[in-house]
Each structure stands twice: as C-alpha cells, then as structure tokens.
Length: 235
Image 1 (tube, helix red, strand yellow):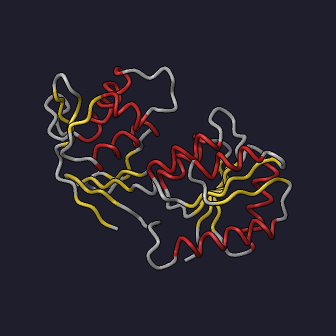
Image 2 (image 1 turned 90 degrees about the vertical axis):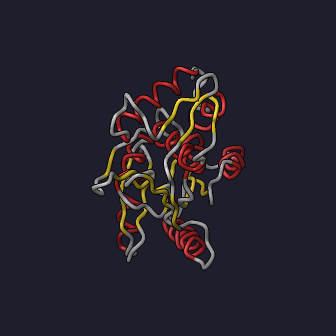
C-alpha cells in the first residue's frame, strides 16, 4: 500500500507542485494550508509522513512539530527558507526527522521522503500505530484519532487529544493541574487551572456515560485528576 503524505504549506503553488510530483511517484497525498487543517487530517486519516512548512499562519511549524512529537511518532520533514540555520537546529531539537531548505529540487524531497519512510518501516522501528483502549474506546496516539465503542471517529481538538493521551498513558496515577498544564497547554502562556478543568468537562461529555457521575476521569479533591479506566495497549 502506498504511503500517505500530508503536505502542509500556506503557499498553493508549493502544495500543488509537490502533490503532482509525489503522486506521479506513487504516493497518496493530502493537502493542508494550516496547522488546523493538518490536525483535522491526522484525526481522520492514517498519515505516514508530514512535509511541514515552518512559516505557517497562526501556529508555526516549529510549535506544531513539538506538539505532534509529544503525542505521536509520525514522520516529520520541516521545510523552510534558505539560510535559517537556527530554525533547522530548533526544529530537529523539537523532534523533526529531517529538514530541507527552499528553494528545493523535487527530486531531493523525493529522496528524503523515501529515506525517512524506509527508516520508519525498518524492523524494530517505534513508529507504529500505537493504540490505547478503554471501555470500548480506542485512542490512536500516532494518528491523533479517537473512536467510540461503535468504532466511529470522534473529533477532538488538539488540547483535548493531548489531555486524553496524558490520562490514558498515565492511568491510575493522580496528576495535579500543574502537571497537566505542562503536558497539554505548555504553548499557551495564558493557560490556568481553569483551562484544565474546562478540558476535563469537555472530555467527560464525550467519553463518560454520565458526565455528572464520572467513572473514567475522577476528581481527586485538593490534588487534581485520576484516570480510572482499565487501559490496554497494542503496538
């Protein structure tokens, strides 16, 4: 099966040029012009690799790289203007797999894409479809995707996904709000305890049979929250 690549760039010419070239080489290609559109793609489809422009509107590619790498092992190749060496260093430190400068030759993009995909698919590679299952729900950590007990996709915001991932990966552990803030909203300087409480209420409305009497996300008074669900994992 052909790998699926998400091209994320706010320049339409760049998107279409790379799409045409990569599709001619046999890849399946999806397009996004912003971080928000990429997150929607990741929530609804299996994406193997992201070509991510650093200079995106609203949320830049460096911040998005850090956010994606916190919850996923998806392949990330950053794309930026020539000469921005500091961006390259920061991007790799934040978890990007590779970096390429504009202007670029499509053949160089193709070579880097193929090389990264080979590494990701190599035996023993950690970049698998990691899942956490609880009470019939399935959270796909590498796809930023949640499905309900009927196997139907449920849309989550980026912050909701990060918080739920933190809960299910730390099931049975009491976590205070400061820890949860660091894990889920570290990019927002105006985040407060109320931010976490609001996200918890939203998650309870999504996954609890009775949000007024929660059985999964439990409030530990004076401390924070505990995820009490029985979590199993695969991959």
